[in-house]
Image (cartoon, rainbow, N blue to C red; front, side, top):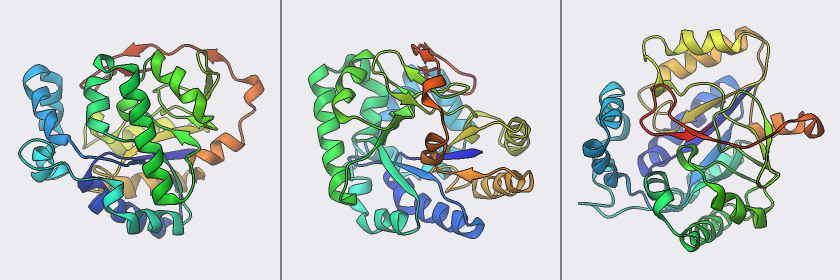
Length: 283
């Protein structure tokens, strides 16, 4: 199986990328898991990363960031007010649900978590979850049953806090196969494939196609801003190749249902910089 983990990180991605992805998935009669950012889009704060982190600048140039995210996105939370992401588009959230896709919780303030989590207090993390979970429930009428951490960024405090939410599974790491988190005893369904924007755009489809042809279960991290934007054609091509290889393309909940949890190893995450990424993530 090929699981589709679709992260929505920005206002642009929610407004433009998600409808595009819904149309593509409808064309192929496929379902995926949409992890929604609920609250403010503070993407403009990423400008500091251009100064502090050469790898971030390299990524922005490689992925043609202005075309990927739009110029307004680069100003949100600084020169322009930070608009709410999913909360601005309840009708699109309803479209996702009506189409039969799985919907789960990704973030309250994605940018702040991604850039500042280690410097934030435990109380800040608790409040972040309270706001995000409340917003998610307002939009969907139910509590999320899974959490996918922004940019695969987590720490031990996060696990101590999420215990109270009793998630059915997490998708917070980059790893080769599902496992049980040592700290919280949560099931983890990780992303094992590279993101489109982490590899050569001209070779992305062939690279990922080669990785998924081994007959195993894989999870592809998809971003509304990327595969729902200027990488739409590559995403279509990859889906077509996967289906031609008789690979079942599914939401993550279907992978969860087919796992024998009792046989999974228990692991402790570590933080590492992966090829093509601008900042370390949990692996």
